Length: 105
Image (tube, rainbow, N blue to C red):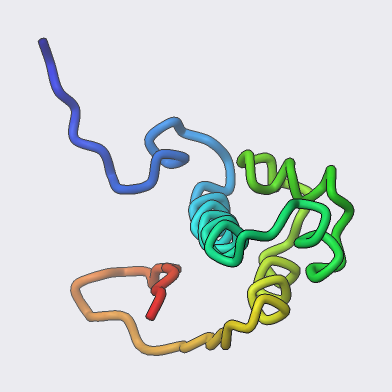
């Protein structure tokens, strides 16, 4: 059996378009889902807090988030009582390009 080591981004490994964006969105959606679960909110209660329809929230939590912007997802985190920071810094010289990642504190 051959084992292939992944890149850490399943969307990239599957050669899907916008792999970086999809990875970021999946991490944001997972965090939103975890907060909703920890607060014992129903999807209806959460959708009211987030300003999303319940069907749209349900789709996002199931990984169908192509129609939801990263900005909207960050707004959702803010509405759930989280501070969101965007930090821009120089990439190491060993890399030609910067990278986008989500770090939860």
